[in-house]
Length: 361
Image 1 (cartoon, helix red, strand yellow):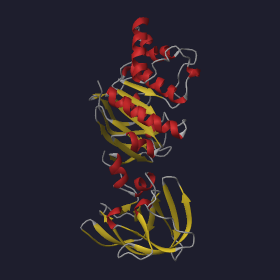
Image 2 (tube, helix red, strand yellow):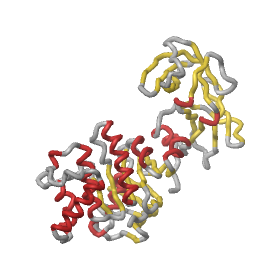
Image 3 (cartoon, helix red, strand yellow):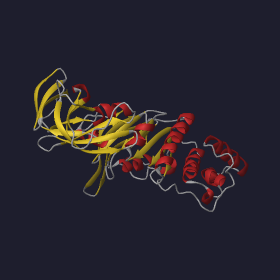
Image 4 (cartoon, helix red, strand yellow):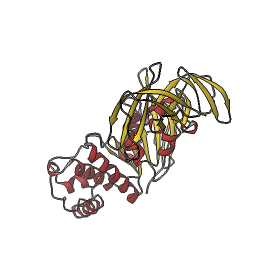
């Protein structure tokens, strides 16, 4: 059975340093939830508080509705997969998987049967008697997952388990992890600094910065409707312009900048804080003729072929750098360096956002 997790106003201090600052979030049973953020933002500390290796300085961790205060890691219905996997090199694969059952006193025949069952689940049917050294990186990942599942946890905790793999293998293992999670129904809590991992696998994502939870939402909402500048800039690329808000009404506003006035989506923040205009490169288009709105003349400065898209970097008259991305689908031709053109964007695809705020999980 999977279990939900409630993090109720949790904080964690190391001396005078606050690593996690009043985090509130409810993770549903059977959910794949990712904490996403840069190194040092507090996401691994949250994982360690859930697993019981650290006690919160303040607040409550509940698993399945039960307060975990005073519960040691081996008393919690959780299994933790470390970044380095921590497999035993002198044991064959099946014994690695069954190790937790051996500690619990399960007899050898039942341990072996459970290991074989889990090997089938992670598509390693013929690997039971292999040594860990005979496995590829992706196979080792699957063994680590099977070992964690052997003890039938209600919650699986994963601390950047794909970070050591190459790009192609990471992409493959994303799909594998998601598939395993869906088949087992176990609650997964995943820690990563890789936005691609978080967006591709998760039901919901919690974006963190400096110990604070900035936004909790589904992957599409995180990307398309970030609540502040940190989330917008950390999850994906953006053109960012400074300026001042003018004529805010009906969820839209004008924004005066050094290169002109633009219109964009705008929800006034609760308190007076700095705001900026954010527009993603894939939402910027190029045209020889200026648009009626949100258009600025530019000179193409650089063109980079990125495979699935072409990145066009251009300069405005005052030297501001803007970037547009063109899909490499054969329908458009990249302009030559030095070409004078216009960059424009739809007001509904741009947002005026405060620099930071704290989400209410």
